[in-house]
Length: 265
Picture 1 (cartoon, helix red, strand yellow):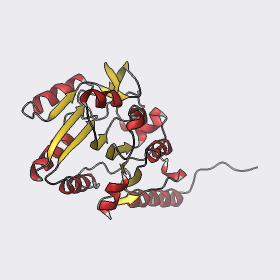
Picture 2 (cartoon, one colour):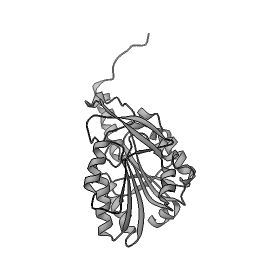
Picture 3 (cartoon, one colour):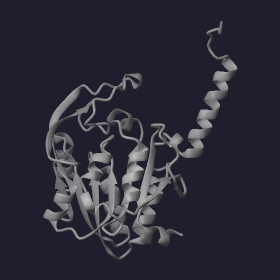
Picture 4 (cartoon, one colour):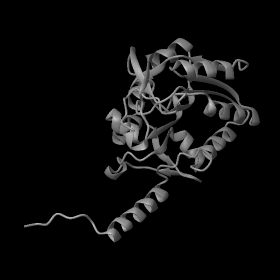
Protein backbone atom coordinates (compact mmCIF):
# COMPACT_ATOMS: atom_id res chain seq x y z
CA UNK A 1 0.00 0.00 0.00
CA UNK A 2 1.17 3.52 -0.78
CA UNK A 3 2.44 5.25 2.36
CA UNK A 4 1.29 8.68 3.54
CA UNK A 5 4.02 11.01 4.75
CA UNK A 6 5.05 14.64 4.71
CA UNK A 7 7.78 15.92 2.45
CA UNK A 8 11.27 15.90 3.91
CA UNK A 9 12.57 19.11 5.44
CA UNK A 10 15.07 19.59 2.63
CA UNK A 11 12.28 19.31 0.06
CA UNK A 12 10.21 21.93 1.84
CA UNK A 13 13.28 24.14 2.06
CA UNK A 14 14.01 23.84 -1.65
CA UNK A 15 10.38 24.66 -2.48
CA UNK A 16 10.51 27.76 -0.30
CA UNK A 17 13.72 28.97 -1.94
CA UNK A 18 12.37 28.31 -5.44
CA UNK A 19 9.13 30.09 -4.64
CA UNK A 20 10.96 33.17 -3.35
CA UNK A 21 13.18 33.18 -6.42
CA UNK A 22 10.18 32.89 -8.75
CA UNK A 23 8.34 35.72 -7.00
CA UNK A 24 11.42 37.91 -7.25
CA UNK A 25 11.92 37.14 -10.94
CA UNK A 26 8.26 37.77 -11.77
CA UNK A 27 7.87 40.80 -9.45
CA UNK A 28 5.06 39.09 -7.54
CA UNK A 29 3.85 40.26 -4.11
CA UNK A 30 5.87 43.47 -4.20
CA UNK A 31 3.49 46.19 -3.04
CA UNK A 32 6.17 48.84 -2.44
CA UNK A 33 5.17 51.67 -4.79
CA UNK A 34 8.71 53.06 -4.89
CA UNK A 35 10.40 49.73 -5.57
CA UNK A 36 8.01 47.61 -7.64
CA UNK A 37 8.12 49.80 -10.75
CA UNK A 38 4.85 51.70 -10.29
CA UNK A 39 6.54 55.00 -9.41
CA UNK A 40 8.91 54.75 -12.37
CA UNK A 41 6.09 53.84 -14.75
CA UNK A 42 3.99 56.79 -13.58
CA UNK A 43 6.92 59.22 -13.79
CA UNK A 44 7.75 58.10 -17.33
CA UNK A 45 4.10 58.43 -18.36
CA UNK A 46 3.87 62.04 -17.19
CA UNK A 47 7.23 62.91 -18.74
CA UNK A 48 5.88 61.64 -22.07
CA UNK A 49 2.87 63.92 -21.58
CA UNK A 50 4.95 67.03 -20.88
CA UNK A 51 3.20 70.24 -21.90
CA UNK A 52 -0.08 68.58 -22.94
CA UNK A 53 -3.64 68.28 -21.61
CA UNK A 54 -4.68 64.86 -20.28
CA UNK A 55 -7.72 63.13 -18.74
CA UNK A 56 -7.11 60.56 -15.99
CA UNK A 57 -9.47 58.42 -13.89
CA UNK A 58 -8.43 57.04 -10.50
CA UNK A 59 -10.92 54.28 -9.70
CA UNK A 60 -10.68 53.24 -6.07
CA UNK A 61 -8.93 56.42 -4.98
CA UNK A 62 -8.93 55.54 -1.26
CA UNK A 63 -7.47 58.57 0.59
CA UNK A 64 -5.75 60.03 -2.47
CA UNK A 65 -2.07 59.08 -2.22
CA UNK A 66 -1.89 57.90 -5.84
CA UNK A 67 -3.86 60.92 -7.06
CA UNK A 68 -1.62 63.29 -5.12
CA UNK A 69 1.40 61.71 -6.78
CA UNK A 70 -0.17 62.27 -10.20
CA UNK A 71 -0.94 65.91 -9.40
CA UNK A 72 2.67 66.44 -8.34
CA UNK A 73 3.96 64.85 -11.56
CA UNK A 74 1.53 66.95 -13.57
CA UNK A 75 2.92 70.10 -11.94
CA UNK A 76 6.52 69.02 -12.57
CA UNK A 77 5.83 68.30 -16.24
CA UNK A 78 3.42 71.15 -17.01
CA UNK A 79 0.60 68.71 -17.75
CA UNK A 80 -2.90 70.22 -17.81
CA UNK A 81 -4.53 67.38 -15.88
CA UNK A 82 -8.24 66.68 -15.44
CA UNK A 83 -8.42 64.07 -12.68
CA UNK A 84 -11.62 62.11 -12.03
CA UNK A 85 -11.67 60.24 -8.70
CA UNK A 86 -14.07 57.45 -7.77
CA UNK A 87 -14.32 56.47 -4.10
CA UNK A 88 -17.51 55.04 -2.57
CA UNK A 89 -16.68 54.79 1.15
CA UNK A 90 -17.71 57.69 3.38
CA UNK A 91 -14.50 58.14 5.40
CA UNK A 92 -12.23 58.03 2.35
CA UNK A 93 -14.45 60.37 0.36
CA UNK A 94 -14.44 62.91 3.20
CA UNK A 95 -10.65 62.83 3.28
CA UNK A 96 -10.47 63.26 -0.49
CA UNK A 97 -12.83 66.23 -0.31
CA UNK A 98 -10.61 67.91 2.29
CA UNK A 99 -7.34 66.97 0.61
CA UNK A 100 -8.26 68.25 -2.85
CA UNK A 101 -10.56 71.13 -1.89
CA UNK A 102 -8.22 73.63 -3.58
CA UNK A 103 -7.79 71.58 -6.77
CA UNK A 104 -10.39 72.76 -9.32
CA UNK A 105 -9.32 70.13 -11.87
CA UNK A 106 -10.08 67.25 -9.49
CA UNK A 107 -13.57 65.80 -9.88
CA UNK A 108 -14.76 63.73 -6.91
CA UNK A 109 -17.35 61.00 -7.26
CA UNK A 110 -18.76 59.17 -4.27
CA UNK A 111 -19.63 55.92 -6.00
CA UNK A 112 -17.88 52.84 -7.29
CA UNK A 113 -17.81 51.40 -10.79
CA UNK A 114 -19.36 48.18 -12.02
CA UNK A 115 -21.34 46.75 -14.95
CA UNK A 116 -24.67 48.08 -13.67
CA UNK A 117 -26.43 50.22 -11.07
CA UNK A 118 -26.73 48.83 -7.55
CA UNK A 119 -26.49 49.54 -3.85
CA UNK A 120 -24.29 46.91 -2.24
CA UNK A 121 -22.28 46.35 0.94
CA UNK A 122 -18.54 46.97 0.98
CA UNK A 123 -16.34 45.27 3.58
CA UNK A 124 -13.22 46.54 5.33
CA UNK A 125 -11.15 45.95 8.44
CA UNK A 126 -11.01 49.62 9.47
CA UNK A 127 -12.01 53.01 8.14
CA UNK A 128 -9.86 54.28 5.25
CA UNK A 129 -8.49 50.79 4.72
CA UNK A 130 -6.77 50.07 1.43
CA UNK A 131 -8.27 46.57 1.52
CA UNK A 132 -11.94 47.58 1.27
CA UNK A 133 -13.67 45.16 -1.08
CA UNK A 134 -17.10 44.29 -2.40
CA UNK A 135 -16.25 40.71 -1.45
CA UNK A 136 -16.14 39.43 2.12
CA UNK A 137 -12.60 38.12 1.86
CA UNK A 138 -11.25 35.50 4.25
CA UNK A 139 -7.96 37.05 5.35
CA UNK A 140 -7.72 35.26 8.69
CA UNK A 141 -4.30 33.75 7.79
CA UNK A 142 -3.04 37.34 7.69
CA UNK A 143 -4.77 38.26 10.95
CA UNK A 144 -7.17 40.58 9.13
CA UNK A 145 -10.95 40.54 9.53
CA UNK A 146 -13.15 42.53 7.15
CA UNK A 147 -15.80 42.88 9.84
CA UNK A 148 -16.91 46.45 9.08
CA UNK A 149 -19.38 47.28 6.35
CA UNK A 150 -21.36 50.10 4.78
CA UNK A 151 -23.70 50.37 1.81
CA UNK A 152 -22.30 52.03 -1.29
CA UNK A 153 -23.54 52.97 -4.75
CA UNK A 154 -22.25 51.45 -8.00
CA UNK A 155 -22.60 52.94 -11.49
CA UNK A 156 -21.34 52.29 -15.02
CA UNK A 157 -18.31 54.15 -16.34
CA UNK A 158 -19.71 54.56 -19.88
CA UNK A 159 -22.68 56.50 -18.48
CA UNK A 160 -20.34 58.75 -16.48
CA UNK A 161 -18.23 59.36 -19.57
CA UNK A 162 -21.32 60.37 -21.53
CA UNK A 163 -22.59 62.65 -18.75
CA UNK A 164 -19.19 64.36 -18.44
CA UNK A 165 -18.79 64.53 -22.24
CA UNK A 166 -15.33 62.96 -22.12
CA UNK A 167 -14.00 62.36 -25.62
CA UNK A 168 -10.93 60.40 -24.56
CA UNK A 169 -9.27 58.93 -21.45
CA UNK A 170 -5.48 58.96 -21.38
CA UNK A 171 -4.98 56.88 -18.24
CA UNK A 172 -7.40 54.71 -16.29
CA UNK A 173 -6.17 53.23 -13.01
CA UNK A 174 -8.08 50.54 -11.11
CA UNK A 175 -7.48 49.57 -7.48
CA UNK A 176 -10.80 47.98 -6.53
CA UNK A 177 -9.86 44.69 -4.89
CA UNK A 178 -11.21 42.09 -7.28
CA UNK A 179 -13.98 44.05 -9.04
CA UNK A 180 -11.92 45.06 -12.06
CA UNK A 181 -13.66 42.81 -14.58
CA UNK A 182 -17.12 44.17 -13.74
CA UNK A 183 -15.85 47.75 -13.92
CA UNK A 184 -14.28 47.11 -17.32
CA UNK A 185 -17.54 45.62 -18.57
CA UNK A 186 -19.21 48.84 -17.45
CA UNK A 187 -17.28 50.70 -20.14
CA UNK A 188 -19.27 48.92 -22.85
CA UNK A 189 -18.01 49.69 -26.37
CA UNK A 190 -15.78 52.47 -25.01
CA UNK A 191 -13.30 49.83 -23.86
CA UNK A 192 -11.18 50.14 -26.98
CA UNK A 193 -7.73 51.41 -27.91
CA UNK A 194 -9.12 54.45 -29.72
CA UNK A 195 -10.88 55.78 -26.63
CA UNK A 196 -8.47 54.84 -23.82
CA UNK A 197 -4.67 54.86 -24.04
CA UNK A 198 -3.47 53.18 -20.84
CA UNK A 199 -5.16 51.07 -18.16
CA UNK A 200 -3.38 49.96 -14.98
CA UNK A 201 -4.89 47.26 -12.77
CA UNK A 202 -3.94 44.95 -9.93
CA UNK A 203 -4.29 41.18 -9.90
CA UNK A 204 -3.94 39.02 -6.81
CA UNK A 205 -5.72 37.38 -3.92
CA UNK A 206 -8.83 39.53 -4.24
CA UNK A 207 -9.49 37.93 -7.62
CA UNK A 208 -9.77 34.58 -5.86
CA UNK A 209 -12.61 35.99 -3.73
CA UNK A 210 -14.37 37.59 -6.71
CA UNK A 211 -13.91 34.45 -8.84
CA UNK A 212 -12.32 36.39 -11.69
CA UNK A 213 -9.28 35.07 -13.50
CA UNK A 214 -6.37 36.89 -15.05
CA UNK A 215 -7.41 35.19 -18.29
CA UNK A 216 -10.80 36.95 -18.20
CA UNK A 217 -9.08 40.31 -17.73
CA UNK A 218 -6.65 39.65 -20.57
CA UNK A 219 -9.50 38.57 -22.85
CA UNK A 220 -11.65 41.67 -22.37
CA UNK A 221 -8.68 44.03 -22.72
CA UNK A 222 -7.21 42.30 -25.76
CA UNK A 223 -10.66 42.30 -27.37
CA UNK A 224 -10.49 46.10 -27.10
CA UNK A 225 -7.22 46.16 -29.02
CA UNK A 226 -4.97 46.74 -25.99
CA UNK A 227 -1.62 45.03 -25.39
CA UNK A 228 -0.78 43.65 -21.93
CA UNK A 229 2.36 44.21 -19.87
CA UNK A 230 3.44 43.47 -16.31
CA UNK A 231 5.06 46.30 -14.38
CA UNK A 232 8.60 45.26 -13.40
CA UNK A 233 10.98 47.29 -11.19
CA UNK A 234 12.75 48.91 -14.16
CA UNK A 235 10.68 48.13 -17.24
CA UNK A 236 7.39 46.87 -18.67
CA UNK A 237 7.39 43.17 -19.60
CA UNK A 238 5.16 42.12 -22.54
CA UNK A 239 2.71 39.42 -21.46
CA UNK A 240 0.95 36.70 -23.38
CA UNK A 241 -1.39 34.75 -21.17
CA UNK A 242 -0.24 31.37 -19.87
CA UNK A 243 -2.20 29.19 -17.44
CA UNK A 244 0.43 29.39 -14.69
CA UNK A 245 -0.11 33.16 -14.48
CA UNK A 246 -3.49 32.59 -12.79
CA UNK A 247 -1.78 32.04 -9.44
CA UNK A 248 -3.46 34.85 -7.42
CA UNK A 249 -0.08 36.36 -6.53
CA UNK A 250 -0.12 40.16 -6.34
CA UNK A 251 1.13 41.96 -9.46
CA UNK A 252 0.46 45.15 -11.39
CA UNK A 253 -0.44 45.03 -15.07
CA UNK A 254 -0.77 47.68 -17.75
CA UNK A 255 -2.88 47.53 -20.91
CA UNK A 256 -1.80 49.97 -23.63
CA UNK A 257 -3.06 51.12 -27.00
CA UNK A 258 -0.76 50.28 -29.96
CA UNK A 259 0.14 53.95 -30.49
CA UNK A 260 1.40 54.15 -26.90
CA UNK A 261 3.32 50.88 -27.22
CA UNK A 262 5.11 52.13 -30.34
CA UNK A 263 6.22 55.26 -28.50
CA UNK A 264 7.86 53.09 -25.81
CA UNK A 265 10.00 51.06 -28.23
